[in-house]
Image 1 (cartoon, rainbow over the protein chains, first blue to last red):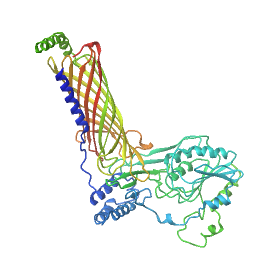
Image 2 (image 1 turned 135 degrees about the horizontal axis):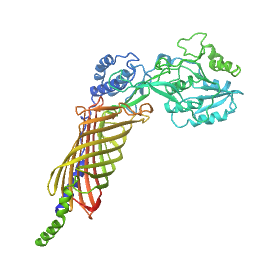
Image 3 (image 1 turned 180 degrees about the vertical axis):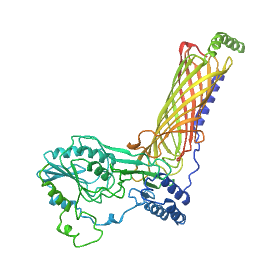
Length: 352
Length: 260
């Protein structure tokens, strides 16, 4: 009996001791400048999905930036160098944040800073009557007694796609709808596709995606279908979707999901062409960065990245003003929304 | 006092010896049995798909196991699982929530038997499944989910020492050939289906070791304490190292009361 107790106690002790040890599974973390640079470069090399698409020579970029990183006199400069290296990917979904108190460094194309004619104050004052109640994420109203208007400023957050049901309910007497997503920078992919599901009565493939799945730059999955499924009580009448160059990411997913529907006409300007599906990564010192992990394609398998999604009806004057001329300042000085003016012309036509 | 002790032990042995001899002739060394236990688990994980550091956490774990005599083979099954929070061992990373499970099935044949000891050899199929939700340290505290599944086949060995009151057993199973599903990046809605690959010991090594002690309470019921460790090393494009240790307390029930 005593021997049994001894064995039991010994076994329990071994188990407790073993369970309390801290086994070392990986080499100790190195937070030197060289180690942080190499970790960032290597992880980007393994993760980023668009090296081939964007014709990026990542080896060369690494060779240029590594000496700069090693020579950085302090963490602030090092963070800036690492962030600048990632901007060489020319991808708005790629960013770098050197600690919780630091500003995020990300890429911006020249046209991102160009003025663009889109002013919600003008729309709300001159075009939209407020006879329909808006929801927390949607601006809802009427353009004419038969044309409803819904503006989606962002797809941030999640779980509010049901607000579109409420908006459609309040506009149930509308013959046609205008969905305005100009200036929508994106947000939640699943939310955007769920909202888009309110405008189709049948499932359909609206695009494809290929995810990075291996260490080589061209290691990508096969084309994975992106599917739109009906949600709520779909509105299947004529829909005019308004887009411009400031439509990015999840808002482009929304555009991609709708533009193939027979009842949807996209009006305005081409979307921004930023579709990366980013993932967050961490360095050993707590700095974080984001990298695109997929390439998104249209149903005819053209990449959305950089190219954007062109509208069916291009509206002159809705493009970014890269240079200032007398003609492209005319609409703003007149305080008119040229895209809505064009849509009102389109909606004046008899219903098909 | 000492004489009394000797006489009592002799009587116990006289009564038990025929049963012992009979039982050692069956593959498991006793009748069919089932055991349930609960305890604490410690998980150590370093999955480069998630973060470049090691994470560790402890939490409750539940375990079920059983043994069946099938002719000359002792078929054993073991399943355990639990959920726990993991924190980085070093470095400034986010935190993780791990949901994992482990199961194995072994077929063992006795190769060396004495009145109290048994050595068995056989094959083991080990399955390890883990889903990790990682919360990053970015300003938005973004979360991503990662997946790791391994099915390994390989040799197994078990040694048992049994007395009428006590049964001590230790086992070792090694993965020789594996089927692995290791998410290269985060799991999205678009890549939910597993991406299975074969892996040989040059890239994936796994092993489990266990030691269990049972003490008879009644003719068919025993209290048990067990320690089990499962380790895996996968040298993928993004390497994985895991070590899972559990300490369990529970009971086992042996059918028919034919013990050891």
